[in-house]
Image: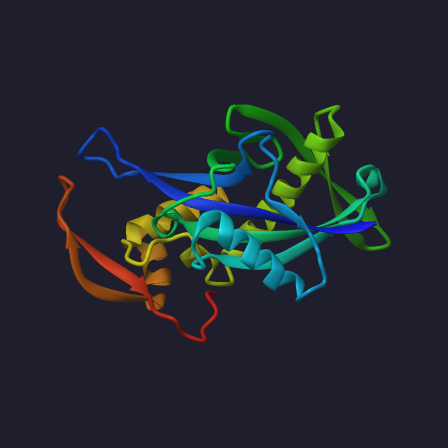
Length: 242
């Protein structure tokens, strides 16, 4: 059986709002092949460590080294072995600002989730349910995906696993900053947090929570009808966002 390295690369994009008084719209996108909308993947050649091989591969596709990459899960369920590949899933994060050119075989398409209801991949919507199984005081979560296409089921399963990992990481690591451009507003940070976690937060409390990890820049944006917006950058520290 071949070891297959699969990447769920989530990219945060921004669309200008037609209403000058409203904040620009944040859109989460995912990198897929144009032909079949499959995720980027390579066989592990064992010429280097897994992460290095995969990082080099993704770098060639998006023409930048500015992205985050971490191993998430091994998809070891027997029903997914029909293609004789053992998939090891990686989560990758980037902001559109750092992606200038994409290999012509790939594209970024919008992706949207509603937990325990659906995953919308481009124009395709796949329904799913997450069930909690209890066994000897242990809890296991099973994702039941509504499709008869085993290849599509496998892909959506990998995307859901990577996305749920991101949601879990966004509260206790600096993962959210991997989705932001080099300079950002505190409002940008809140909007992205709410988009990923599917929650609403108190603006004031959130700003107090996040600002200790941000460093004010000299840049002020004045392209909106509101008061000028101060731009920040991530203040790299050894703190954990708690």
